[in-house]
Amino acid sequence: MPEASTATFEKDNFNAEKYVKNLVQDCVGGPELLQTKQKIQSLSETVSSTLKKHVYENYMQFIETAKEISHLESEMYQLSHILIDQRNLLTTLRDESLLDEQKNIIEEQSLDPNVNEEQQNRKAIQLIKESLIGYKGNLDDKVFIHEGGLIELDSNDYRPICRIHLFLFNEVLVLAKVKNEKKLEFQTEYETKNIAVINIKDLDGVNKNAINMITSDGARMFQCMNPAAKQEWLEKCELAIKFHQVKKPKKAPAPQPPTSLKFDAPQKSTDSELLALSPTASEMGRVIVENLPPDWLVTAPEEIQAEIAQRHFEDSLALLQKCDEHLAQDSSFHACGILLRVCTSAIRTSQRQARRNNLAVSELFFCDVALVASEFLRAFHAKAACTSALIVWCNMELQYFASQLIKHYLTKDTQLEMVAKVVEGVREPCLKLREIGLDLSYHMEGLLRSTLGQLLDEARYRLVDSIGRTEDPWQPYNLQTKTGLRTLLKEFDTLGIDFRAYVTGDTWINLTQATVNFCRHLLQTTESCAYLAKYDSLQRDAEMLIRELFLSQHSIKPPNSLNADMNFVAKNKTYMAEVLLPTAMGRFERIADKKPELLAELHAQLRTASAPPKPKPRSVYQTDVL
Image (cartoon, rainbow, N blue to C red; front, side, top):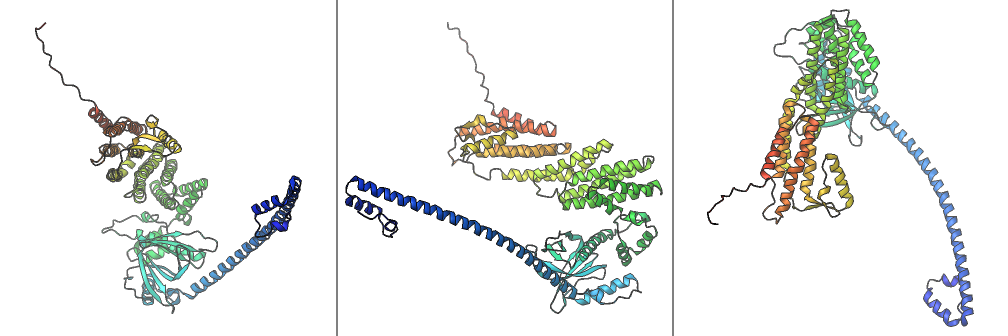
């Protein structure tokens, strides 16, 4: 009888089938076979228990190993933080050393403080021209504002690229690359009216003290030496932009009263220096200095804007009231003019920040206008002559707001859905001004009418041109799965169309895929046009867009090479005329609160064209034959 032991089964050449054959041949009778079976069963149980024991031991070792790995991971995490801190410290020391080595061109040369500022400006420009290699531009008529060394960073990974020295003038920004021998090689220049400087939030050791400069060549990122230098660059760039706007003279400027220039652009002491450097503005600057208001009133627009941005409306209202009390001491008409100029600066500053932060500019603007109008009427309720100043101010602010809205949100190729969203976002808060007796809706419509009309024409050409680009097989639409069919039915239920009567089988709709997709497209376009049609002057253009879009799809015919079922083609066209078009008309009327006359006329024409022809009258002949 073969031996039944674990050693036998552990051999590499063990064959179970051969072992069983030998066992049957060697065993005598059933009792011996049964005895061998019990022994093998006992060995199986022993091996099973041993295996469980080993699995348990391995599991315990795995848990211990996991704990050790967890502790090791924690230590590695702490070590990584230590290394990051060390790297940041070394990077900071390196940047400071690089920037400390790069001295300002003007500070190295001692300017004589006894000469006037205009001569100092000319001498500063001369020193800059001498230090720049390869610069061929003209700086003689420019006003020098600021200079300094920065490090240009890669906008993707914030990696330092090179050292850059910037020279900021009232009209241009000159960039020079720092060479190895501390020489400045001219790189490029930008007009200050075409640049925008954005403050970048400091990250943990990645891009501290960085600013983003939007230029005609794209975005460029620079790193300053410290927060103070960064703040100074932000202020100087903003100052250059304001100075450029203020300095634009007309061919024959009319004489202005001294106070007309006080609050056109709230300026600090550096503004007066710039005015002194400019020969054309020096005389105006002397007049302004003689009639300067208190310092807190000059900075009031910025403080009001900051309070509004931080949602401290009570503090901003208190500051406005303080301005009112101060201005009330002067003549009422002069005071209301100053107050409105202060409000202009505050509103336009808040609008710029709202655009940068992607906030609802329309609601913010009309809320500010309502607040200004309410407080103005409360402060000057006894002065009827001041009301005209408020009306003129509202007109000017509305024109400026409309121009900025067109510039930033209603540009060419803007999608029709976005145009409708912007217009609706303007209309609703504008209508709320009626609650305080101020109706600007008609004026707002007039300011946007031309631009919106052009956008509707462009959208009509673009949408009509997109019809028929893809070949339609003129076959029923197969959704492939029941889930896809249910999803499609629910989607069109929200649009006001029920396809259940056209469902055949489990996943088929007895219309073409092009017809189903066009239903969605037309209803979405109708919704956008309906919002624009709330303006009476745009209703006809909006209906014309829907009409031409519908006719473009309705007139499509299958090619002669395609053996299409003409009854199925007629069924799709009938559905569009009898179901889709009335649904679009109802959606238009519900949103715009106006009857779509052009669409109703189109519907009547289609029904007349699809009606069966009347039978021709037949002549009845009578005879006398019985």
